[in-house]
Image (cartoon, rainbow, N blue to C red):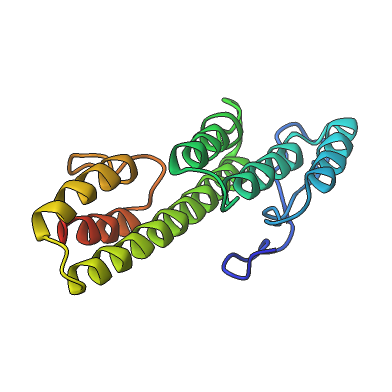
Length: 179
């Protein structure tokens, strides 16, 4: 499990919409568990008819998959995109507490996506700085940096949906040192 993200802020009851009692909202998912662990919890949530818990475990599963150090950025981004698009959108009829829960899931995906992008950008920044110190030409490094950062940081001034504004700003600052 990652130390950088809390696993949840406790259980909060959803506001009743029909007078029937509603189930409490789940905690935010744990990150870093095994595929079997997520599968077990997803199946249990489905059996319980708990869509919020199912989506939370799916988000945890896809974030964990995206953090695999052997994946390319493009592969990681597919997992982050999938989690945002398929598992962080509340039902159309969701009341405020449920909508807020899904918003928190999306923010969690953005946090991990930004952390991973910043980790990759910082590591590459160190490589470029070392090579520059060892005598590599600035022009050669600029060409390589442009190729690297084109994949990681989309062009334009608008923050993409998978990053927070703060992470996007930091990524652009790192990029702009080399391009």
